[in-house]
Image 1 (cartoon, rainbow, N blue to C red):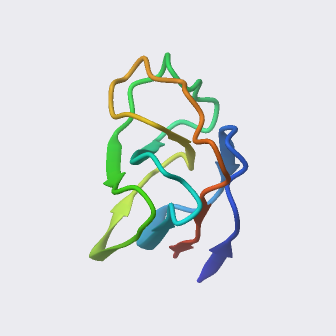
Image 2 (cartoon, rainbow, N blue to C red):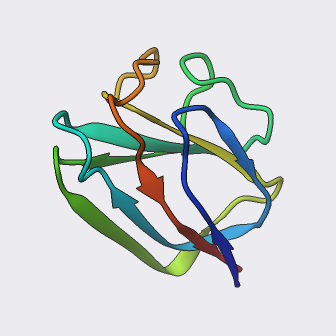
Length: 103
């Protein structure tokens, strides 16, 4: 298993092939938001369509658990924005903490 740390508003490259758990912590943000994940390691926020969009309410933490996992054959990229729309590139006002557990 790998543990991956904080997302700093910019797309991050993470190498692994199956996401098992994703706690998404938006506690520091007054606006709701979305954590987006895409299969490509060279994805561009606002341009590349996300394969997975996970919403989180404002000032809250949401735990997403995938018992069978979500497989990404070529690694994955992720980013956090304030809305689910594909073109949304608006960063949250504060950092979002997301910890991926992959295998």
